[in-house]
Image (cartoon, rainbow, N blue to C red; front, top):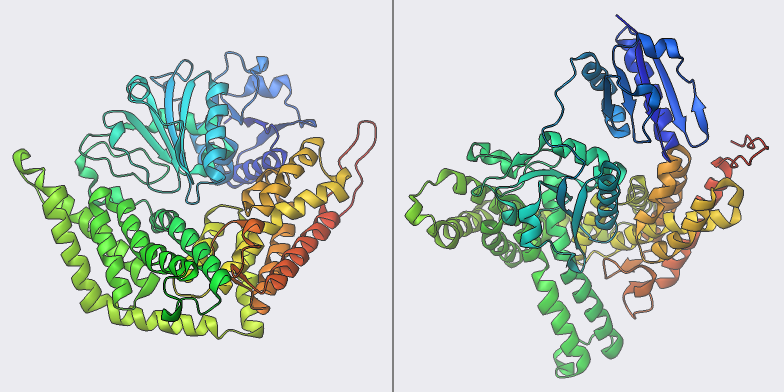
Length: 585
């Protein structure tokens, strides 16, 4: 058996290229094979392949994107992405050993693609994924139109004509997206991360795996898998994952939390902390408090539950989910009961929709009568007789525990939440910490939200400052990006740190985790409170939006300083032409 020959083209992801080389070397050793890996980075070529090795290879593994290599002209090559190698190097080598597959029926060049990108908060990942897809399509010679479903709604909305003319639909989203308008089209779903990291690779995967979406089955497939093409997909169509369903609910809940929290803070500023009492009735402060508390805040849990159910069962799940959310508030089960109600309603309606078969003449009764009636009944009965009382007791215990946390206990929780915010900067771990903070606002527990926002602001701020203080340790592009990172950090957009972490993850990410963890711990220890779930520095001047504002500022400054110091210690100087790089730790 001939040796394995691979070419890794890392582009600006040099660290990922090195990791991919090591992963391939290890996988080849475990398989008892010899491997020759050429690594191409912006700094040059490591371990270049000689002509003899190339000539002896039956098939060449090409990793990453890059210009055409004349040495490989006419050769049988397996093209994969860096992410695919890092995720499953043994699987990639197994594919290399298998016979070459037939070329895709639809070539990428000239392909017409429409896409939607969306993330739970609709701020950073939504637009980064759109940019990744646009760059990937350009590299492959395809046409693409991307609709972004962000925090202010849909932008660049796809027209019916564009959808009709499209050869492929790509959905890169971390929350539920309405698919009804794509019925009859080849469709592929993914999370936003693959689109951000390798848009061209995601498009190639979509070309190979996309399936036609049936007009009767428009619920989402599991992210990273093609949409279901037939009704036999059954209950699996709702199995996009607990995390994605929860994040969909949180994303729809956030506007109620933001609006309600700010209005309540303004009401306190106008009329004092007792503005809600009857003696102030009719005043502007009392009225704003009622709008924020009785209006916006009262819809938080129903929105959370309703859109969790929507993510699972599509539109038929909304009414049962919202009804369950209202009942959760009525019986004292709070946000925990709302989350449970959303999942109960969603999966109940999804099952009913699959199980109930009606003649075509009666199909119209399902979405307007049968599913809402049965869904609301099942959810309501379970909430009253099974879920309600134990969930209410659990919520009361959790609330009492969190409100009673002092000293070391509070510091540990802040340390954990803060560290989570910097681990993947907008990814699943970050969003899990954020969801924990936002849902606790519904139970009037505001300290974790303060720790989460403060810790989420420090990574971009630290990198922005580090690019100025330790300029020699960053590339010109990174120093320029530092200006934008500073603004993003002030705005509580943690994703501003991603470009820096992608270039040097083993040094940057631990440094950022250290600072964010310290910021979170200080916030919790000092009892800092935050009544709104977003806004960064721009909500700090609002009276009563932040409890213990000096403590918040101290935590943010200290956390940022810790990350800056860590970056100064671990980052190496960038090599200048004609001069070796300093070998700092």
